[in-house]
Image (cartoon, rainbow, N blue to C red; front, side, top):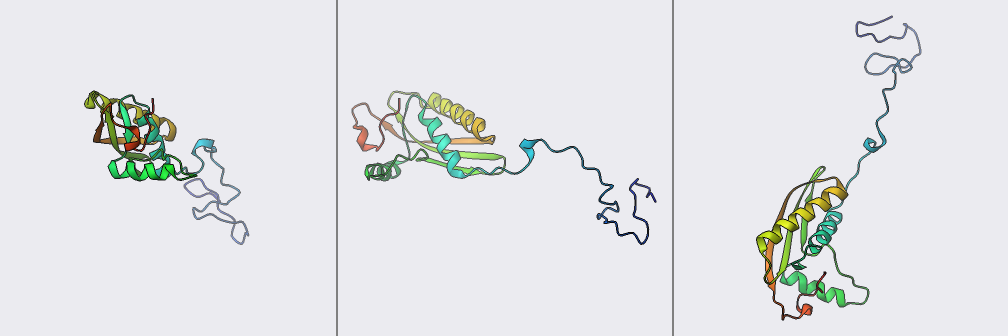
Length: 164
């Protein structure tokens, strides 16, 4: 017996299983299988995006350190503790959704560097790294310049050695 939509119904009194759509299970043809990359779900933790963004920001010449004064001070103490290690995500905050992310950076710049040019370069590097590695769309990178590192300042005051 065939319904108007073309599905076959089991004969009355038959023990054939039915789906909720009125077709028999053996009559349902499996569609083409989904490509492997679309089977399942990938979630990316905030900390992963923070680390990627932090490393990408530090790669830009003219960035002395990331984080505000208190963050850098606490980080410096944590780094001096045996077994402690520098945090790649220090000075970085992110909001991660299913397909998009927003990033906030707190930076210390080297004296003499054009802050507007530096901010544009940091944005480009961070966006490229995060989008390439995670597949997330970076909707914004907000940069707060918290300090300027003077050439005669000791690097231990900020808690981070220069990364260049």
